[in-house]
Length: 340
Image (cartoon, rainbow, N blue to C red; front, side):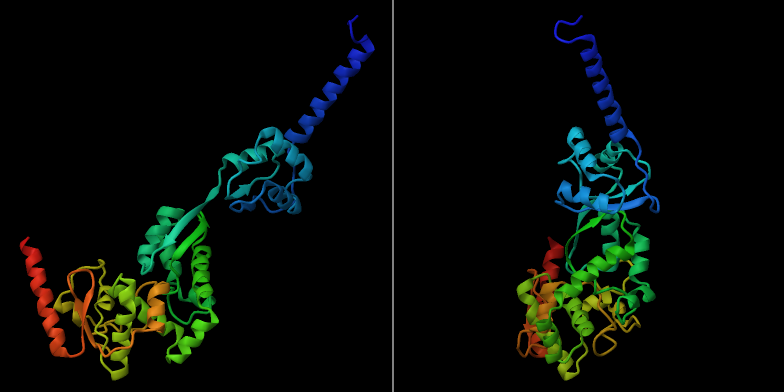
């Protein structure tokens, strides 16, 4: 007989231990069935506490008991290891199998993506492919689908101009529609009432503002110079001059930006601001805060012309003769560069 326990006591301890093991196995290893469409799509947000995850899983009826789930997570050491991601949860997972998925995947993880100021739909399509694993052709086609664009309340054939630059956190392999809506929400969030009032004050529509802002962004990357260039275009529109904006021609080139040739200026398109007066039909890229504000609050001056100065900025002229002087200086600078 055991020195400390009688046979009956030893049997009772072993029986209790066996019951605990069986109960633990049944609790933590037995599949849990849910009565929902399979698989359940479940998103864990960045920085979301584990208790919130457990509560939401219980609320959705994916797990039958959140206390048991929390105990399993404690035993598994998973409370601080789950990742922000979008999961597809199959049916009949045990608590531990579910935790294994939440810790190790497979899943579509939350990724950072940046829409740069002045990016076009074409360039952004490559970015979402690289950063979010979304088919670039599908994204571009969706962004240019008039029916989808109209469903967002935009009276324009494409989303060009309405995908707002900024930093976003988006799940991998999201649908193109979802991603475009997120970028568009950035656009609508930007347009506060004070800015909308300013649009009316200058006699533009929002669409016209972002169209001109996209041209301003196409002309310069210098934030301080944007209001001055915007002022030039405001002056030209006011006196009835054609905008003659090189970026609108670049937008028409199938192979991307390059040095323009004289024959390019004869391309027959409403986007050719050398041939057609006024603003083009829509934006030529997706402008951000700075070029938009430059158009809304342009510098007041009497400049009608500007040309590159060879140093990253521009020289501005009030008369055509002054403009030609700066053009000659720029061409001389180009010749010097070619000889180097």
